Amino acid sequence: MAGSCCGSTRVVPRLDPAPCNALAQTAGGLLVPHTVLQGIAPGGAVSATRSVDIDVTPPAAGACPETWQVGARLTPVSGQTNGALSLNGSAFDTWVPVPATLVLPEAGIYELDADVQGGVIMVGSVSNAIVQARLFNVTANAVVPLTTRTMVLFAATPAVGVTHTLHGNASASALYQVAGPTTIRVEGLKHVDSGTTTGEIVAATNFRFKKVSD
Image 1 (tube, rainbow, N blue to C red):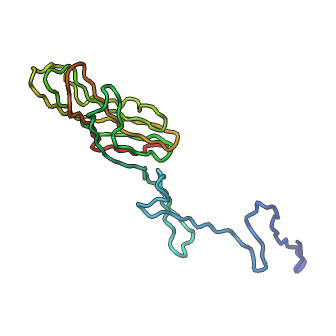
Image 2 (cartoon, one colour):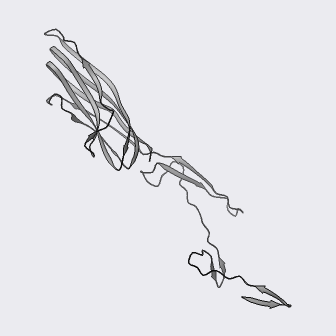
Image 3 (tube, rainbow, N blue to C red):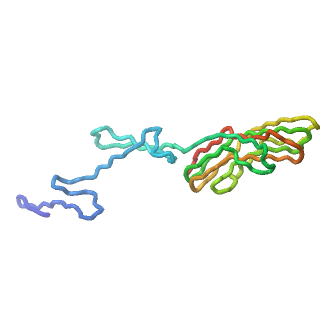
């Protein structure tokens, strides 16, 4: 719009009516959008499945220019459990679920760790008594690679009438990638080439996970 004053011409700016124009002309004047960022209190999270939180510190009231501070911090999802199982009555060379199960809540790469213990009592002449543990992906019906551990291995043959009790510890751990929510459990197995064993047990004293990457 053009007008004149004292012999001069002035141009009154007008708004482009395009829908993507964020400015608006009203009877009270020009409206300019104002954005206020909302942060999360340190130590908090929007949900339990976030691996990174964004912190936002607003400017002081009335500051001009408005300076916002934005930062990020890791808040990886994690969890832990434990459980123990007696292998008495279970078949040799058969993997049996230990009551220690965790659910990885979302897609990503996880650090899995299980502190496992195994024990066995050998009565009389026994050859090659073994107690093992592993991590098993219940959702995919597949073994978690590189997690099979042997807690007890006794290859000697005790004298007839002599009882031997063995106990061992191991750590079954791996970096493991999943495509979505996944259930992981600890499993135990016993084996003997010959002879009689009893009191076989597998325990996950601390089975835990922590997400390390999306």
